[in-house]
Amino acid sequence: MAELVSLREAVTELVKDGDTVAMEGFSHLIPHSAGHEVIRQERRHLTLVRLTPDLIFDQLIGMGVADKLVFSWGGNPGVGSLHRFRDAIENGWPTPLQIEEHSHAGLTNRFVAGASGLPFAILRAYAGTGLPERVTHIKSVKCPFTGETLAAVPAINPDVAIVHAQQADLRGNVHMWGITGVQKEAVLASSRSIVTVEEIVERIELRPGGVVLPAWSVTAVAHVPGGARPSYASGYYKRDNDFYSSWDTISRSREDFREWMEKNVLEVATP
Image (cartoon, rainbow, N blue to C red; front, side, top):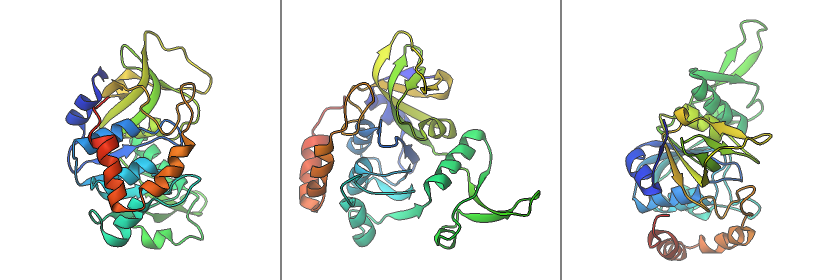
């Protein structure tokens, strides 16, 4: 059952060096504050998993947190490249980074299989691409009923899932709405989970299209208003488009990046 704790306590107890950590949120409800706390606590040798690694993963990679990235698209949305990600791939700075690339459908199905307790997932995907030749976690299987050749991907079961949501109640039930990605599947597939939320409410009022994570599926809930900024939280605040644009300049040089991280992350108290 979920415990209501501080963000610092949640990361201290649940994120360990060497863990596989999924941080999900599809353009919306991205867990930036939790990612910053992982950086402040100097976790190392993590395998990071995310459909769309963007600014928070650029920061995690640039601060030497990760040894490997499992992903299906990477970039600064609407702006361009992730310069710290690129520097790690091209130059091994600050540490070398292994990558494992999938399609959105492939990685989503890996989460679904993990959440379902299945060893792998089957999908129509990857045909005409070079990924099956480059990624060992993509295989072909023949349907026993039709003879059709399909792609198979193994379940992914992270040690920890970290997501952000709008609300949780006093028992730790979580409610999110708006554009959601694979937050639910990531939490259900993982051994442990941290959910940061905009507010704690006495009672959840369900919304059309809303997603509920029951308290039994969540390990820890932390009250972190603004925890998704500079991404957005539907009903609470908008996306900070100016910051996404400015990150392109901030992250281009190692020196400017480190200076920004020192001032805006390392020297900032945990919310």
